[in-house]
Length: 213
Length: 135
Image (tube, rainbow over all chains, first blue to last red; front, top):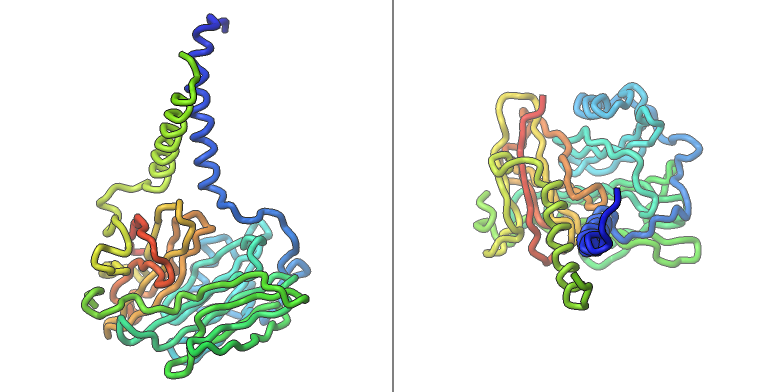
């Protein structure tokens, strides 16, 4: 289509506006995290853990994501009472590994193909008897292959190393009045920090009245 | 039309507005009657959590949260027990700022579900929160 040169020039601002807008949208859709894949997850050679029969909630979630509920692995578990949590893993129809935390009373959410640009894929959960206090806090998760160690920071300032099991998974849980987990740090073989992660252990309200429950 | 520095600035501003409209339209795919909460968290009085009663009589409920993407921080799903206790799980920003919670069993101890701004985050975030029956 032939257009007069003056008309073409008039389109330049429009093209610029749309182009820059697309750039903004693109930047929002893809956060400025490192996108290269420096390493891999530990399960590249196959899932590790204990083959298990899941509960109904987990099985229903698995089926909704195209994951065979009869082929799930129990990767890690920790905690007592309401702080008990299990981490399941399965493989979807695309062959991607999916992880599913199962705290008490809820579950069935499978996160497939976890992003490799985060050294830790952690699933914290917490709860309490009153809106302004925390009674228990737990975390389960998996570490990338290049993670040599994971430490948990507790509410009293103490730091403890966590054991990475055969699936390179970790777990920690505590019930008050014991110090609660509030953050994780992942280290490489040189002892350099790969990631720090807040575990959101704070209660929902600073006072009971503010939450209305 | 000449492309002057002033017009370039105007185009950039217009581009930002257009990007916001596109992103907002993509996120808010439901009307205000779908979300039981739409607004900023924390609220003006410092309240960080909003919640809604579960729906009878399916076996499961779940909560959905979407939030303004610019700040790249996580949100939390909040569950409230009949006893007044609570529990929460995170919704991570890297999965698209729009999350469904794990399913929660209607017959279990939770009476309400909702959304919570993490205590470690101190910025006002426009949040949409929804509770629905599931199966």
